[in-house]
Amino acid sequence: MSTTSAAASRPSGGTRPRLRSILFPALPLARIRVLRVIIYAFVVLDVLTFSRDVLSHANNAGFYTPLALARLLHLPAVTTPLAYTLLVLILAGCAAAIAGRRPRLSGAVVALAFWLWMLYSNSYGYIAHDHMALMVAVAVLPTVAGAESTGPAGTLPPAASTSTSTSEAAGWALRAIQLAVIATYFFSVVPKLLYSGSLANWGNSAILTWASIRRGSALAHWLVEVTPWVFVPAQWAGLALEALSPVVLFLRGRALYIAVALYLGFHLSTLVLLGIHFLPTAICWAAFLPLERLRLPGRGVQHSR
Image 1 (cartoon, rainbow, N blue to C red):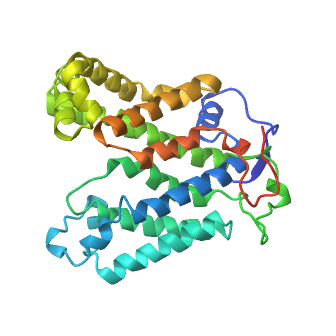
Image 2: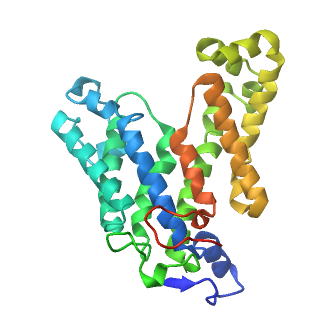
Image 3: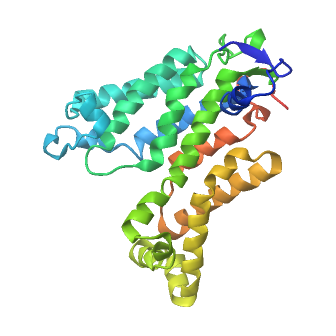
């Protein structure tokens, strides 16, 4: 897709143009450049910490239970040479993309290697559904043309040197990440319904109390002892956040920022109370924000809007 200006003419009227404006909004290329740094920096952190289990899975073929996509690709059990090869490709690709060195090519390398990495990470008995949006992010970021940086100082090409340079490709990539973020919450309602029989059963259950007793922090234990009544309303509040998450896709301005803060606050509370961080999804909320207002180190242009 070609780069267009913010004031470029757009078709009006009819269902198809309206759908196009929803799925392919013309958004700043500068937003992609900043998001690229955020996502790839987190991927480096992720493979070195949260999903580092791929290295320990090597040569444990007896525990390998490949996911459907892994079976479709006929992926063998991971070995030590393969695990370290994927790790090197991910780290090198992320470093190149962050530095603005052929970010589409380096991003494609990261996408392929990271997807294989996560297929292996999730094929040994544990499914990390908090990584879905992150996997979508690394897959779609390399599809955006015109957001490259050139030169040793990371200077921007003239066509993409200001935040007013927009692209439908950028809009599609950001929308894909946003949809993946929202789907992570919305579809989490399904297992609650299946396991409990009804959302009412789950909302009125003692599952959060039980989790707080089993793995909770000192604050969680204090709440169980002093204010046990707070857990059922908290469960219903969590259900509401998940079920109503698609609404965020239609919010703009201050309402959107409040919603993002609300969901991030939700994750902060689960981290403080239960030690559950959900960082791979939380970091992808950046796709909802006007990142072009930020200034990247080494860029000679401050992007403002």
